[in-house]
Length: 437
Image (tube, rainbow, N blue to C red; front, top):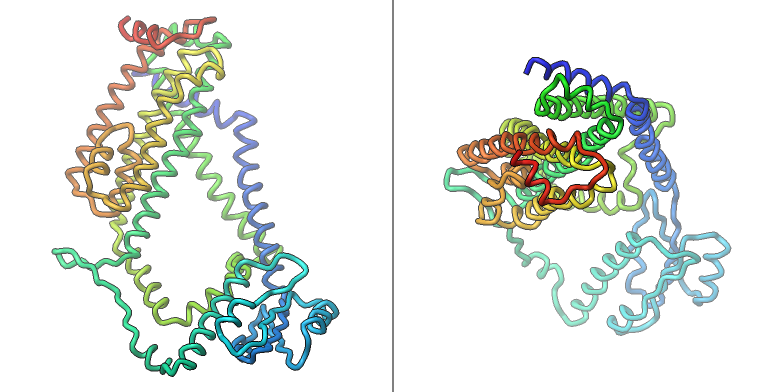
């Protein structure tokens, strides 16, 4: 294996010195930050926009319901016809007109409310208006029926079942959501890394094979050394690219925020008003506290170590298969028949992680697929936040490493024959023959 470090160095330098690699490494964060900055800038402009809504309440039930805020101003009209109100809205360039028809019956009032505007109104605004009107009209109807609304509100009981393990560890419903987010992010990141850089390895093999450079290299290097060198070198190049993206993205984000005066925290648009109202609710404050506690309850150290190990193991496993496919074909068009069996386990792992792990992280389906090597890097990473015994993690990791070693041997067999085969697209039957050589 003396040539392996030289091959790794060659592959790494070839990738990082490639013009397209350099351009995309620099251009990708610039494009991403530019898009985020445009969205943030437009959102900030939208936040500064003040909407004036004219309210014509002919019933007299809800005219004191609406309270103006920084972004929304309510003007209540009285003793005026609907047509005159529409004229005022147009002349004052107001956002819209909320009309409540005249009636003594609350149900009729509720069924005849209309909102007039030149353009389609904001979905968030309409939902907010509906929520306020429903609450007000419901209270009025209860009062008309002789019901004490304050007594009903005081009689409401809110249930929040406390969750605690037999060891005394306290959890909540939000814990499951936080765990799913962290596990899902880790699994999805691995999925994307495999797809992006696995294809890069495959294309690299195809390029060297078609240019006949491989015939010179293979005369002094073993196929398995060449394949491992490509996998590790490309992986290091990918990691370098990720690090540059993070550093460059952070610098650009800071510069854009300072130069353009964009506050990324103001990207909420009209939803900010709804969130501010929700924050005034004690129940919401309690949920925020539960969210903070859920974050601290995560096994952070275990997550970091497991993420690194399973990330490396899963990537190396799939990269060896991508390298074998690149050696077996002459162009990217012929790779399609071989890529589907590789991509399907990854897609299956993501779906199992999302739809099964959240409901039953320790169930049979989740447990079994967290041991299968083609799905374990994703499924196990999604299970670990829910508390997986250490022995299960170790067994899954050992199976993954063992499968990787077998896959490298298996892929090297195909690689050894395939890199010198030209002009013919192999079938699965021929691949099996190559392995027996």
